[in-house]
Structures are given as structure tokens and as C-alpha cells.
Image (cartoon, rainbow, N blue to C red):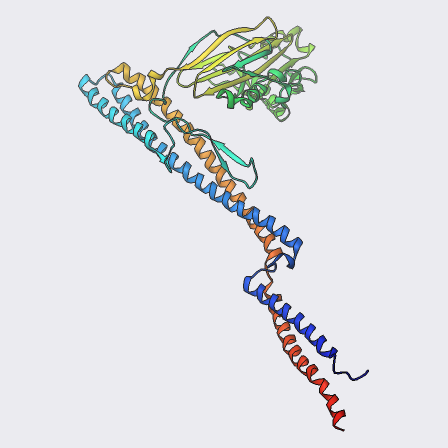
Length: 505
């Protein structure tokens, strides 16, 4: 290798390596100072893209948690006010019971009525003044609110509180229209002008072939449009009563094909009412139907078949039980259980829709659905056959019977006030129950979001955060390399001076 002085290759190499070491040292210092592995996009382009997406989710989750906590405070404010209104209503109930006592005179009732007036006024003040961040909560102006509890569009929880004013609570319902019986499935039902379309898809547990007018299917169809009608459906326990069941002429054994419930054969000894109940209950896991002795049965011969979930109950008898010595038993089992389509409770805006069907040697009982609403209910419909039809039925609220208008001035008015206060307590309890359910849901939302936030934050940290141990090790290594590079560069810069010794000699 020749000796050259114009180009110092060794010095160039030393400069390049020293520059590389210096850049690595600077990067290590940046990471240690910031705590992040990715300081700029060039550090890890793919990792930056992933971590930014995770960061966006994490920040959104944190805000969603704050939203849910804000909503909890919102609901707690309303629930606290309703709790105090409950106390007032309880005191009003005590006063109404006291005023309804015939031993009191007009002067005594006047004192009670004065306290009633003050309590009702305070009740109204709480309802009208309770607010959260200037938003009125209980005066009837509060509309449906959607809470953003997720990081994506549509991840919301909707709720409303309802009107808790004394002029709105406790109002008794009035009814117009006719009661009718149903002997077949209906093809058209309308509630508050909204068509209720019932299909077999609405019912996964009722008896095959009868699903389209089972209580479960009706309830689901009604609730599907509750946002438009303001009417909600609750399933009632389906109960079929059989009275004076006499087993004296019965052989005492159910064989396959003799007796079935919802298509499941009930087999075994059944020589008495108690044994009959035992046999039915043995197969309840398959039928969804249980048996019990009817409450208040004096002779112990009255039995109820019941389905707690409101499902349809189909009772079938085989030929062996339809003739001969067991005719009486057959007549007891195969009763016609046609039920009034509507039952009415004036204390709340409620209506019960129920139906029953007797077909040949089988009894089909479809259960009952209770309709509830804070407003009026208008029901109309037609049957799929000529056996059924009913005129429009209206369940309406009488505003003059609300809590704000009660009086304890005489015994009769006190009795009326007691019914109104009871309805008020029921409605407030429902409002508080709904708020409590939403609060519990929000607690679950907060817990879920917090867990998700932890996991995503951990994933983001794995990608973006610097490993301090690794970075300190790199810093130390690069500091040593930098010192060595400076020393080598100094030596490389002086190596060309050897050529001067040739000139001197």
C-alpha cells in the first residue's frame, strides 16, 4: 500500500464511524429523555401507525369513562331527589290513612289537609327545581338522552327519566270500549296507531304450530315498536286451573301416549292429585310447565299448571283417556279456558292481553301479556277468523286525579287520596328502579372500559415506550465508542506526518 498525503482514507473511515456513533448516541439520549422508543416516524414507521391508532382508542376510552362518570352523577342527582319525594309520598299516605278514619271530625281533618297541602307543594318544588348543569330532570321536559360510552359511532346508551311532577303522578286511569274473548289467533293488532306484527320468529319456546299468537311472541312484537307507541309489554305467568280433579275412576298410571304437555309424554303413577303434581314436575325441564296445588283449595283437589316464563301450554290426551272409565278425568283436563282479552287496573295505565284455546281433545293456553304506559293506550284489532273481533279500547289518564289534586277534607276524599298516593309511590318506585338499573349498567360500562383501556395502554406501551435498560446500555456503549472514535480520528489525522521523515532524510 502506497504512502499518500492528499487523501487520508483512514481519517475518512474514522469520521464516518464517529458520525454513526454520535447519531446513535443522540438517539439513545432522545429516547432516555422522552421515555419513548419512537420519537419520530423514521424510528419505526409501522410501529408509529399502530401505536397512533391505539393512542386514539385509549384517549377515546378515557373520555368515555369520564362520560359515564358524569352520567352517574347526573342520575344520582335525579335519584336523590326521587328518594326524598318518596319520603314525602309515604308521609302523605300516613295522613290519608289517618284522615280516612271515621273517628276524626272535620276540624281534625282540616289540620291533616293543611299538612297535605304543604307536602304536595314541596313535592312539586323538588320536581320542578331538580337540575343538573341547568338541565331540568324531573319536570317532564327532560327528553331522551344518548350517552356516548364507546369510542365508535353508535356506541351509546339511551335513557329518559320521566315526569315526576305532582300533576303527573298518581293519576288514575279510565277505560272505554268492550271486553271480548279470543278463541283463535289474531291477524291484526294495533296499539296507539302502530301495527303489531307477530311472527313465529318472535317465540323460540312456545308450542310448535301456535307460536304466532303466543304470549311470548306478542310481548316481543309489542316491545319491538315501544319507541313509537310508548307502550311496553310484560309477560305474565301462564296459569291454568283445574278444579275438583277426581282420580277415583282412573287406573292410576300414565302410559306413553296417554297424557302430554307441550308434546312431552307424562308417564308414571298418578293415582292422586299429589302424585299427578309430582309426575308433571318430573318433566318440567322438558315442558317448561310445573304443577302445584291451587292456593286456597279446601278439598285439596284443585291443581294449577303454570309456566313462569309465560310460554304457551298445550295439554293433550290420548285415546285411552278420552273414553271409558276415565271420561270424568278427561273432562277435567280438557276444559275450555277462554279468558277475557282485556283486564283493567285503574291504579296505573295497564292492560292485560290474554287468550286461551280449546281444540278437540287438546287444551291450548297462550298466557297473558300486560301492557303498560305512562300515557293513554288505544287498542284495536281483528281476528283471523269470525270467532273474534273487538271494538277500540282506550285506557286513558284522568289528570284531575293526580297527586296535586288530592284532598283530605272528608273521609271519602281521603280514601280516594290513598289510592292516588299508592299509585304515586308505585310510579316513583318504577322511576327509581329504572334509574338504578341504568346506574348499574353504567358501572359495568366503566369497569369494561377501564379494563379495555388498561389492555390497550399496555399494548401501546410495548410498541412505543422505550426500554430504559436497553437504552442505557446503548448509551454507555455509544459513549465508549464515541471516545474511541475521537482518539482514532486524531491518530488518523496525524498518520500522514510520517511522509515528512522521508523528506528530512
